[in-house]
Structure formats: structure tokens, C-alpha cells
Length: 393
Image (cartoon, rainbow, N blue to C red; front, top):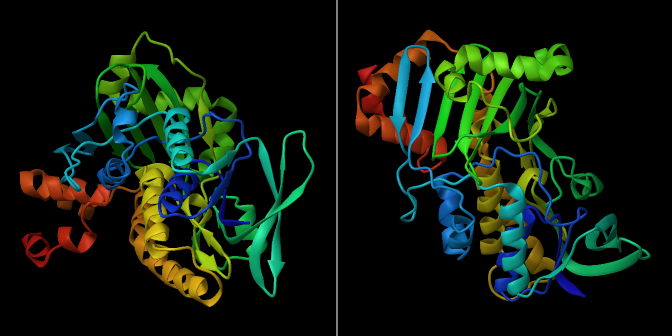
């Protein structure tokens, strides 16, 4: 009998297991893949996420992998170029973009050190229900038979297509059609950078990661996916040749150090994040277009929120249900603003009113910093769109 079973050991599940184990919960963490394993990801961790890593005592391990800290962002759209950085969060002023096979492994190792029982190559099967509440699940390690594992709480951290969410019939509170499709690969381009280039119908992002490599990604409207998927590499190269020419010149004569990755399945939804005996974190609870690179940061914030809600000794029955109700309500408040702002960015439109606003931002170092702080989640939109700033426009 476990207190908690966490399904999925990527950044959301591993950090949730880590935090709950440190609170004294007996935790089983299962993962379908064999670790370590890479996954589709924008890699970028904004300052609020970095602050969580520091508070959990794992940031030094990530820095020791050679992943460079990124303390400045360049954003180019139309005739506007902004260069600056987000305000620090809990003393953390830099962002990081570690490869996922490193980040996820570090978090799992920290969870095991905290007392978590970890099983990779383990398939999650049907949830177990009693009197309308989840009381465990069936699972099978490679080469073994199915067995029932029981727990007071099952946490689904099993991604956008979460089977936990499907089996509990988690209510979809908000949803929108896919906005973009995306392609990326890695280039031999050392140095710390985060650069963004926006144009009507296109978006290019470049961020430094491990091994002196830079991830360069391009975004296209979702309706272009079927047209470009057959010649994705040509479309990808044309995108940053046309819309990020300075970056393209840096890479002229080079070849990618990895294959081209891509997806046209960027779903947008917010699910109810908890119910009797179950909770959802990460992409299982809330998924949005990757264009704002908020997925990992949001996963960490959700893990911390669930752990804070379940603080103290393990709970059961009505007491646990009340904590889960509070988590579900707070979860929606945590993610909804970033969700809608991401949908706005993923429209890939550049309107004159927005350019006028960005020109005003570019004239002020303070407003530039505040703008990047809003993008990182270090401040909310109300602080940026103050009455004084709006009146100046």
C-alpha cells in the first residue's frame, strides 16, 4: 500500500514524486520508457521554474551538466528589437535549457534519494476504483505479469494523451483547436543565447543547450502542416533564412548535429486537475502550444502546488478529497492566464497596434524588463499593462 502512485516520470511526475516523498509520503513512480530517454521539448526553463529547481536543491546538478545559463533574451518583430531579461525570481535571474534526458534523469535520481520507489519500463493499466474513487492501478514491468498496486492517491503525469485523465473522465474546462505546427533540430553553435524572431505566420526561436549546441525551432500555422510535412526540412531552413537572417548567416555552411523533429499535434486544453483519489499534473492537466516554452516551468509550478496542498502527513478519505478540491481550484487559477496568452501568441499575427506597443516598450529599459518578466511568468499581465503605461499609448 502506497500513499501516492505517480504515473509518468518526466519533469512533472519526477518533481511531484520528489516533493511528496520529502513530505513523508510513500511514493511509487512508474514510467513506460526506459530511462534516460529524450523527448520532444522546447527545453527552456523560465526564471520561476529555475527558482523551483534551486529550492529543491537540484539546480547545481543541472548547471554541472554544462548547460549554459541564459541571462538575456533578444526578441525581434517587424522594426522592433527588444533585448533584456526577466526580473529574478527568488534570486534566480538566469534561465536554463537542459536536454531532457539529463533534466528528467536528475529529477528522478533526486526523487529516489528522497525515498521514492522508481520503476521504468513499466506499463500503467486500468485504474482501480472503489465506491467511485480511485484506490490504485494495475501495472506491469517488462517481462512480468500484471499486478495491482494500491494507493490513497494516483497522480497522472502521463502527458497530453493521459490515460489517467481519460479513465477518470476528467472534465475539460477550456479548449481550443491547435494553432501551430513546429519543427526543430540542434546546431553546433556554442555560447549562451535566447533569441526570438516573429513575423506574420512564422516564428523562430533559438536557445543554447548542452554540448555547445543550440536548439533552433520554427513555427508555422497549423493549416500548413499537411502541405509542409512532406518537405519539412526545406520549409524549416527557408523559415529562418527569411525571418532570422542573422541566425541563418551564423549557421551558413554548418549542418545540424541531430535529425529534424516536428509535430502537428499541439493540443490546447485545461482539464479539471483532481477528483476523488486522483490528481493531474503537467501536460496531463494542462497543455498548450509550445511556442511560449512554458511547459516545463508550468509543470514545476503545478508539482509544487500539489505538494503544498498535500503538505503534512498523508491524508485519506474526506480530508484528502478536500485537499484535492482546493488543488483543482488553485490549479486553474495558476495556469489560465498563461494558457490564454499562449493562444494569443500562437495566432502568429503581427498587428500594428501590437507593434506600436512594443515600440513604446523598446524606449524604456524598465518596460523592456517588465515585458520579459511577463513572458517568463515573473509578473502578471496586470502589472505590465498598468494604467500609466496604457495611458502613454
